[in-house]
Amino acid sequence: MEDKSMTLTEHLEALRRVLLVCIIALVIATIAVYFGFRDQLLVLIMRPIKEIGINPVFITPWEAFFTTIKICFVAAIFLALPVILWEVWSFILPALHSHERRLVYMLMPASIVLFAAGIVFGYLVVFPAALRFLLVTASEGFTPLISISRYFSFLTMFILPFGAVFQLPLAIMLLTHLGLVTPRFLAKNRKYAILIIFVLAAILTPTPDMISQTLMALPVIALYEVSIWISYLVRRKREEKAKEEGI
Image (cartoon, rainbow, N blue to C red; front, side, top):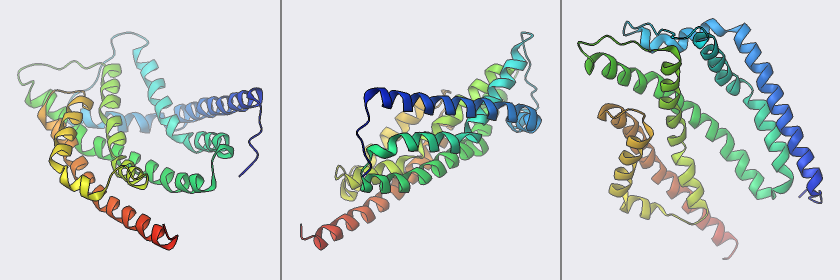
């Protein structure tokens, strides 16, 4: 393991450098998004609501501009993510043991992929269905007047939780690796897990309708079933390693 004999001042200086580099990367990425593919990004963001024949409006003179900046900033976070992850990883690397580094090397790429899969699933499958239900089916006879800032806030609040809940297999794998859960425990308490998933879906989705909550809960239940098999494989690997080491 690398030398950890850094003073508090040196740690703070290293942290300041990491934060500075991340901020600069975000600023550069935001400018690049704004001047590079702002129009394509706005088309992508607006597609779900325009597919049901609704054009968002802006109420104040600055609303459209600042909402566009916010959209570009959110996209810039993903664009600058490699730099941010590299800086954060470089900061915490000296404090980790070799086996901890291997665990991070394994979990980080999988976590990013699962987060992206959750976002894409929420945007392509659940959000359009929820939007159609709320603005067409459940609002028949009324004329929707949706501001661009409220629409983007709603979209963000709606799809980000999908990225979080799609981390379930990794969480189960880590808990199994630490010996806190077993595949037998997960299978035995499946009905309670399903209940908790539906409760969390009701909390995480910013809408009160059952359709959105169910569309979030169903893939998470499927991920839970996959997690049981992952837990089984991790458990078996731990047992085989323990036998090899004579524990």
